Length: 489
Image 1 (cartoon, rainbow, N blue to C red):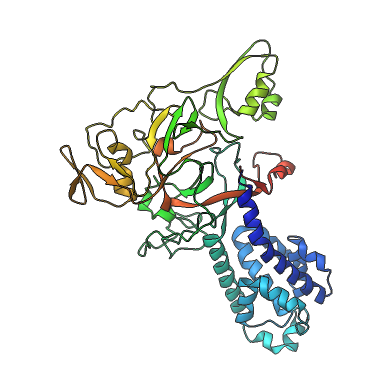
Image 2 (image 1 turned 180 degrees about the vertical axis):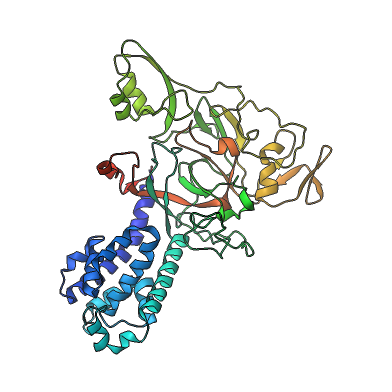
């Protein structure tokens, strides 16, 4: 259970939030409003519009992703002007260090409410408020807000939305999650010149959101902990080769880490073994099952209640072990058993899969390891400083690591291997690597298909769900209230 990470972030964020709310409380009271109004999301924005004299319909903008940043910063600028805070320095204080200066202004006697700053009378009565035009003041505020948001996203916490079913039922499509950058240490941006709040392309276009003329080497700040087995991690997809994107501009994936650097991983009949020990699966892990009936069909309502789903392109339904136990208890279920590919049966998996591209071959064809998604390995996860002997069986497993992730010139001449022009038969790894699986084991594209996750691709640790939206549900049931503020196990 990741409750420790959840609590840790709350402990760090709570003092900042409480101080800012205390400041708003006192400033609201100075304007003749009730202090408690500052505690209610969005309604507090409505009150700030009333205090500053702006149209209350502006509140609508706060519900739109990009507009909310711009208008939210502008509302704060107009709000603090009501208290005589007109300068660019005041705007920077309110946006970047609001948890310090809002309570300071709220509790000090010399800061008083002067009236609605957007009214003509205010501008006439307070000439200093006209020293900078509203456009410039808002522009400065937006700059400070974007800077603050980017700083928080880079070094503290970032929001993501779950787009696919690969982590069900731990994470559902439409879950909005927070990912901590503090746990493993924040990764310094490798492509520092880029458009804010965009990953690799500008919204609704195919234009790059970054300039790759300046790329920095991988560097990570110290964190609270190292990556552990069972952690749900967000990372850049290692096989994203579109336009030769920089590492930190590749697509984001979210999976569960099941093996860390130096581990030996083996999957036998769906059971994951690490270093020879069976690993307990996550509580909401889904596997495929087949069942035989005697008598009537299973009610669709029962299947929905147990979250039994047959995904597109799949023959068998997926469900958690708990759902399988409950379904097995129904009188019309004659038998129910897990479905898995048998040992020795070869499937399109790493390193022979279509998604695990190899640039250099040691032999004419890649050996058949007789691996599949349910019977895989053993395979050793590379660890920094570990030396592997390279031969016809190990070379295909680590070729991409050596050439692509660790930036070596790799060549094969006959049966000889050359790295950076030097003939070798061993290789010592420079980074740590990890092995990840989706909790929805038969509907997840993960390490079984494309291999290892390098440490420089890891963005952070998923810690909790702050909102969950079911786009397929009726209008008044779209919000999954029971998932809000839930930790990620």
